[in-house]
Picture 1: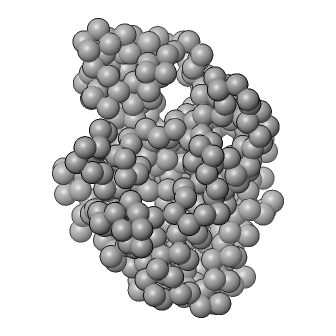
Picture 2: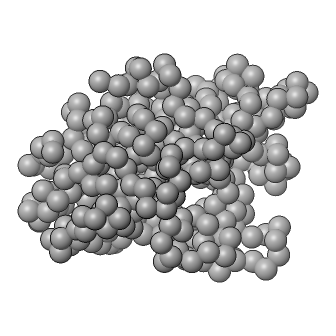
Length: 357
C-alpha cells in the first residue's frame, strides 16, 4: 500500500461546480476552418478506401484540429480534467462517416483501446434492454442511471449523436476535490481507499471466466510520481472482492459509499446536458462521471445514442504499476478481445515503454 497525502491537494483539477457559474472556458467550439478540415479528412480517407479503425494521424490530416487537441490533452491531464467540444453537425454525416471522423479525432488525441470483450474501439452507449442491477451487466447498455465512476484509459470521450427524450443528464465531479473533502472530514477512510482491491472483470478478462478478477490489487486512490489518480466504481470493486473470496468490511463499504455520496452532492456535482454533436472528454484519473436514467424515443432513428472512445494519451502521467493494469492485459491496456474480434487495439508498445517504471 502506497501512502496517500494526509493534507488536501492543491491542483487545477480540484474544482467545485460553483467555479463554473460564470465560466464556460471548458467548452471549446469547432470553428468553420476546423469543420472544413474534418470534412476534407473524411472525404480523403473515403477516396483512399480507409475507414474507421484503419485511419492513422497521417491519413486523417487536420492540422488546426490537431493543435487544438494537443492543448486539450494538457488541460485533461494536468488542468481541470474535462473539456466539451461543441458544434459538430452530426446530422450531415452518415453513421460510417461519423465513426470515421470520431476515430480520426481519437488517434490525434492518443491511442484508443478496446472497451470490451468484443474488442470494440468505439462503443455505442445506448439502451439494449439490459438491467443495470444484474451482475456482469455494464451500465452503458441500459437506460438506467449510473452512479459516479471512472472508466479505463487516460481519457473517456462521449460523442452525442442523439440525446434522450428526457433525462440522461451527465454529471461529473472532481475526484481530487472529493479526496480533499475526505482528508478534511473522514481521514480514517483513506486507509480503505488506498488499499488494493481485486476488481471484477465481468467475464471480459483473458480467461473469459465470469468470476475472473484483476490479478493485482488496485487501490481506488493512488498517489504516484507527484500526482493523485483515482479509479472508482463501487459495483465492480465490491463485486470483485466478493468473487475473490474477500468480501469488504462494513468500514470499507462505508468509505466507498462516502465517495459516491460526495460525488453526487450539490457541493461537488457539475451537471451538463448533451446537445447533438457534443464531445465530452474526461480525464479518468481526476474526474468521476455519472448519468441520470432516461426515457427514450420510440423511433429507432431518434433513440439516445452516444459514441464512446477510451484513449491513452501520448504524454499521459505515469501510474503506479499495480494501479495501471486494470484488465489483466498489461499497463493501461484495454480489455482482452478474442482472435476473431474485429477492432482490437491495446496500448502501443512505444507508449507502454515510455510510461512503465
